[in-house]
Amino acid sequence: MINIAFDGFGNDHIIDEFSYLERHKLRQGVYSALEATLKVKDAANFAFDDHHPVIKLWFGNSDHETITGVITGIIDMYDILSDNTKTITFVNAYGKTSRRHYTTYVPAPGIAGRLSHGGEVATYYTNERVQNRDSRVLAYIHGLSSDFRCTSGSLPYLSGSAFKVYIGPAMFKAGDEGIATTILHELTHKALNTIDLNREGLPVYGRGDCQRLASSDPLYAIVNADCWTFFVFDFNVPPESFCTIL
Image (cartoon, rainbow, N blue to C red):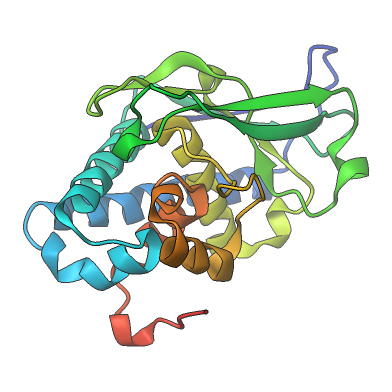
């Protein structure tokens, strides 16, 4: 599986190390994300058609094109998580120094992306502490490079430099499942070039907003990080157990 490393923040050599327990929780989060993704990948080989309700719930459609795109995305994510030549580095960004970051979606007209969606995630940042910005930040990424190129899609979906995930002040208050889902959320940005915004440029996070996005705008649901995350972790939940939020 992917290697796991830990680091402090910034270029000024200020190191705020994770505690032993925090490192353990982050490792367990990676294992859980890998296990959940593997279950979906295995199902794609023989029983994906049985999961149309969860596909439609989080992506708005369950037609052949959507299913093909979802299978491709799952393979891309699993390939990264299971690749022992790659490393995910968790950076402590809630200590002495960190950066305020702004993420926006930059359209790329005429460039075909996954399911006819194009563009890239652009992040801008200044030298301010995440803790001062918002104590609710769980994690974030920034930067795009070719370090984690996925090859199974029609385009080279790019990932951030060396797959660094910056851990915010709220991460370890989220519980084990929250840590795992956050790690997978950040992975989708890397592997699938997902975004967190709707067509109007407004943020879309959480089950309610994601279900509404899938219902109203499937083209944006298929490139939303939380839609992918909830799909993976809800994949084996019986459809009758879903709480649909309108």
